[in-house]
Length: 81
Image 1: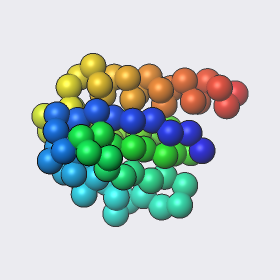
Image 2: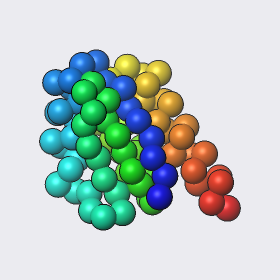
Image 3: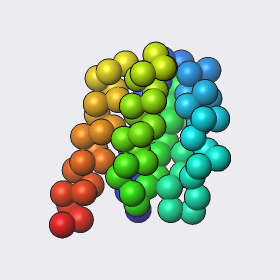
Image 4: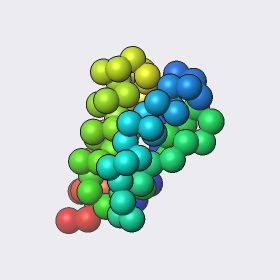
């Protein structure tokens, strides 16, 4: 399982992201809040990509922070090959 962290605008934004995605997680894909950061554990790289895209589109995270999460998920795919 890989882990990445999404920095949100503030703790309230992070709580919104977690509330939106936690119901869809499971044992292999999880999302939890750590202050203003969303901690994403994943096997499926689409999970952090979807979370980062949502956070950016909803104005809950800056584009640069969302891009870092997407890049980390992409790197995890490359490492698994």
